[in-house]
Length: 106
Image 1 (cartoon, rainbow, N blue to C red):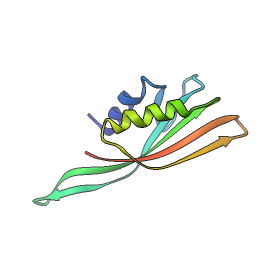
Image 2 (tube, rainbow, N blue to C red; image 1 turned 90 degrees about the horizontal axis):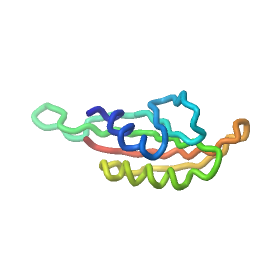
Image 3 (cartoon, one colour; image 1 turned 180 degrees about the vertical axis):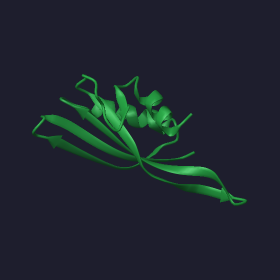
Image 4 (cartoon, rainbow, N blue to C red; image 1 turned 60 degrees about the horizontal axis):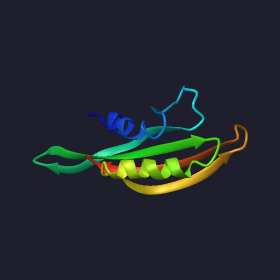
């Protein structure tokens, strides 16, 4: 299973989730992308594990903290670790946004 499939499978039960761009109609949703991939473990001149850095963005018109907590728990269960997190408010669209950076070695 690809990293994208793993993330979508884990997060879709919490809120609609899409790779890069969400085109649905839900007011609370998540998007994500991988911004870095590198070798995690190399043995016998072969990459045994890959480290993925992933940006998860959660958008909503109201309080998105519960969705964020559930998303972090779901990804933690897959082995992801949070590396940073920031909250924003986009006044032009009146949308709350939480960006969470995570890392996993697979």
